[in-house]
Image 1 (cartoon, helix red, strand yellow):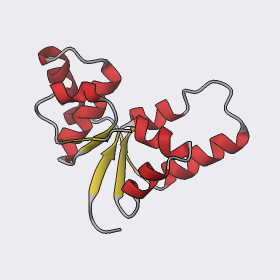
Image 2: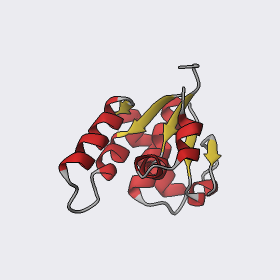
Image 3: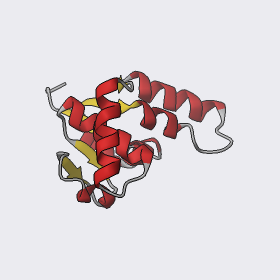
Length: 123
C-alpha cells in the first residue's frame, strides 16, 4: 500500500464486486476504510449466493472497518441537524470526518456536506 487512505462509500465497492475495472484500478494500492454501515449495506442485496457472500467477506477482510463510537455518533447528529441527509449517508460522512480521510463515492448527494473531503467518481 502506498499510504493513501480512503473511506469507501458502498457504491464503489459494489462496482468493484461487479467487476468494474476502472474502480479496481483506482482502489489498487490504497488503504481502504469502510464504515460499519457500508459493511452491512454490502449484504443488503437479496438472495446472495454462497460465492457472493464469500467475495463480500473477502473484500471486507481487506478493509479497515470503522465501528460506531461516541464521536462518530455526535458528528452524525450534527450532520443530520444541519443538512438533509439520510442516516446511513450521515454515518458514512461522519466516519470520514472522524478519521480525517477522503470519502470516495459515486453519490453526488455528498457534495452538499461541507465538512467532508470528497472524491466524487463518475462512470
